[in-house]
Length: 427
Image (tube, rainbow, N blue to C red; front, side, top):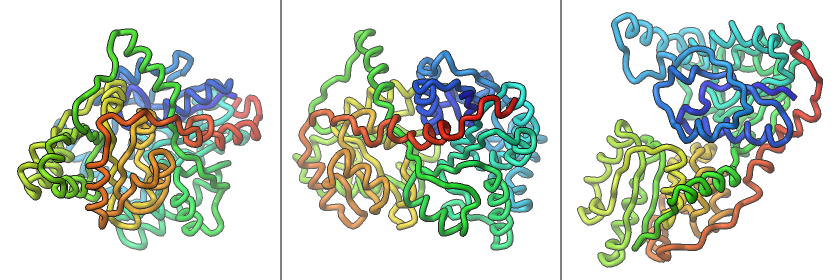
């Protein structure tokens, strides 16, 4: 089938959402489908990861719909843009819109239906946000009545405790808008079992069939990148001591403080063996880390090294060099609904993962792959410290977790496409 993946984020854009688009695309191509991307113009991206660009299959056909939205820019470049940014920040509350990426939703509503007809798409998969993409569904359905329209939620829209804004009236209008759009879709995928339960409680009855489809660890891609590294003469470098790696964004509700507190419980000799490597941005993540570091002893602060973000292939190599990898979810029970995308990168690195949070999907994935003794609540700081102290300098690589690989995780999409084969649906 000719499948169009519609996503604001796609390689070479470095956001972790791009990783899902790449893995979905590789899986679809491996199963004989033709893959098109409808995304931003690569030349206009605010950031670029050349290793993701190099990993993108040549068979992918790219359709570009302009540059980044104003909401994506770190600051306005001039007075008119400042006024427009203010407007786009207020519009979701005024008009019950799903998000601030107003221009992207507008482009899709205007251009996606004609593009689908011209290219003869058999299926369109709206994935990886922003949620405003679903506003294009009514026009797409009118233009292409036989088209398979599939929606892939990275996070929930309604029913998401972290994104609730505005008053009850605005939330109800947004709920109605979401229901109306999804009613015209053939299938909705959500990526955690907690999200599936929350969605089914929010929408009674569901506006369209809804199914769990997790993210995936693309072990074949990891092996390809490792082989390329070896061909260039580079391999993961063994290190003395215990090296813990954190990769990604630090959020106000997902800070490294529980890990720092656990390190403070180690005796001096054990602590000297541990180094925590934090690969994060130099803006909000760095600020949050620097707020937490003064709250712990100087001996702990000396064991923390912050690094700027690196390209995906380089990050995967750095992950492979770690003794163990760190994943911290929020302390609130509501946060159990989320599985950070970097967990699947961690699985690809095949290193043990130490998880702090509440029981939920992320906890279960870590328990399944690293072992149940690698998961800790916020109240189990001493247990986390004991687990760190017990780490061997270089534990063996974990076996690939086939229950979380691409072929297994994306099976719901493959089955849905096979069941809905209707050649030329958009022609």
